[in-house]
Image (cartoon, rainbow, N blue to C red):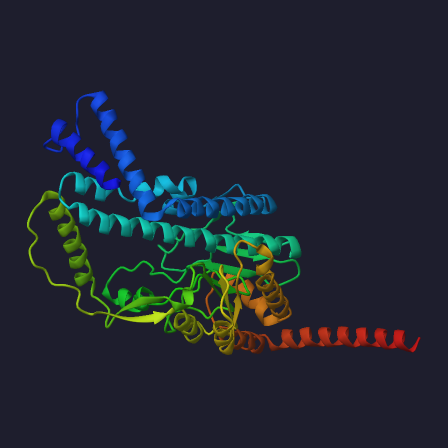
Amino acid sequence: MWGNLLEKLLDFLNKYDPKRTFNFGNEILEKKFNELREQFVETFVYEVLGEEKLQEAYFFVRKLTLVCEEVKRLYNLSEIVWSRELRRFIKDPLRHLKHVLRFYVFDVLRRHITKEEFWDRGAAAVRTAFRTNERACYERWVLLEILKQLKIRENARIIYPEIGALVLTRAGKQKLAIIPPDIIVELQNLSDLSFFLEAPRPITWGDTQELKFVWSLYRIARPDILVYADKIFNILDLSKEPPIKNPDVVIEIKFLENWWKRKRLLRIFSKPLTIEHWRSLWIQGLYEGLSEILGIRKPKTEELKPQKGAYATDLQVLKMYLEIFNPKMLFCVSMVPVPNSIKEELESYNTIIVDDVNFNEKKLEIITDHLIHLAKSTKSSPLSTLMSHVRSKGFSLSESDLLSFAIQFALMYKNEFLDFLRRKILKREQKQKVLLSYKRA
C-alpha cells in the first residue's frame, strides 16, 4: 500500500517538479503534493506499527497525562516540562512518528535512496521513536505516581526546583559541570529525598584534561531513577570511579514483553579521546552529512577504532548496577508479569522485583513504603542533618571530612565547647530526674 502511494507521489513530482525543487509556484499543486505526501507517510507508519500499537501509544500518553494533572494539583505546580521529543509525542503520537520520517522522505523523493532503503531506514526510525517514547512515558508515570503517594501519605513538599514547576528533562542541566537532581521532596519530620531521572550523563568540559576526568560518564551504565535520602544537589564525585555518589535506591523500569531475554550492546572506548580527535570526528560527521545532501563523493576517512562493545542481558545489567552503584536497595519495576525463576534470580542478589504493574499504581506502594522507611531511618542522625545543611550552602565533602572538621572546630573553641557540653548534660540529667519522679509517683 505505502509502496503504491510512493510511486504515485514520485509520478506527481516527475510531472510537475522533475528537478525536485519542491517549489511548485502554484497553490493547487502544492496542496496536492502535501496531501499525497501526508497520505504516504501516515500509511507507512500504520503499516510499520499497526493500528493496535498506535492505539497503545495514545493509551500510554493518556495515563501519563492523568497522573501529571494529579501531581500538578497536589503540589500546586504550574506545569511539568518534558524534553522536546517527548513533548511532541505526548501532544500527538502519530504526528511525532510521521515527523521522524521527514529526512528519509526527502531523500527517497529525490531518489538519493531506494524504495528498499527507505523501508529499512524509515521503519527502524519509526520503531525506535515508538519504543523510546513509550519507555519515557512509562518511566515518568512511575516517578510521578511515587511522588503522588509521598504527598498523600507524608504530605511531601517539593523544595527543588523552586520555580513551581517540574523539569523532567536533563537538557541544559549539566552545563555547569555538575549533575543536579530533578526533584527534591521534603517529608514532614523526615529526611528529604532527592530524585535523579536518567542522570549519569556527560557534563560540560573545556579541554583534554577535563575530558579525561569525565570520560567514564560517556560509558557508564545509566539506571532509570536514582534516589538519595538527603538534599543532594550534585552527585558528581570525581574522586570515585565511576564519578557518581552511591545512591540509596536504584529504580530500574522495564515495559517490554520478555525483557529479561533481551540483550543490549554496551559500547565502551578503551581510552579517552583528546579534544583535537573529538573535534575532528565532529567535523568529519558534519562533512559526511553535507556530502550526502549535496551528492558529493565522500573521501575515505579514519574510523573511530577504540570503540568496543559487549552484549549483556538486562539481568546482567541489573547486576552490574548493584556492583557499580552499590545501592542499599534496587527495585526493578516490570510492566509485564515475570516468571518465578527470573524473580528468584533477581532476589538472590538483593533486587526486589515489582512485576505485572501495568498502570496499577497500588503495585508501586512497596517502593513508596521503602522510601518512607529510608527517610525515617535517616532523619534521626545529627551528622546527616548537619551534612544536609552544609551541602545546601554549596559545600561538597564526605561525612568523615565533616566529622573531622567539627572535631577541629571543637578543639579550637574548647572552652566554649565544654560550656556547651555542661549545659547539655545538665539539661539531660534534669529530664531524667523528672521522668524518675513520674515513675515513682
